[in-house]
Image 1 (tube, rainbow, N blue to C red):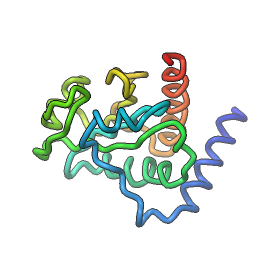
Image 2 (cartoon, rainbow, N blue to C red):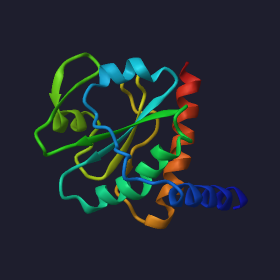
Image 3 (cartoon, one colour):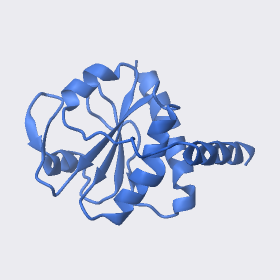
Length: 157
């Protein structure tokens, strides 16, 4: 319980103290290139779609503040994958695929979904997070998932 309260307090302070106007969650456009940048980082990918209010909520209230804090720079790359919008990306093998096709590789057609991807082989490091139940606790759950995914990645090296 003490760990939970400490993390929640830290996340709250980080989120409230960061100007978010300049922060953008980068689009996932080239997984092959991202994998070369990643080293001991994994990819945290938000699968979203236009007009998804819960996707915007997670992006604006959780992921952008996390990214802006700099606290996660040594563990992950934040990316956004927008499905049902017609955009294309380069997969790990260097092939161009639609965002929808890429999401379906991870059985992810529901939004919002968070994927924790191993940049070396494209596998999921931990179970994806689908949807959002409690907004107040979601940041805590994401923070714990980040820790777990990073430990998993380090164990694979």
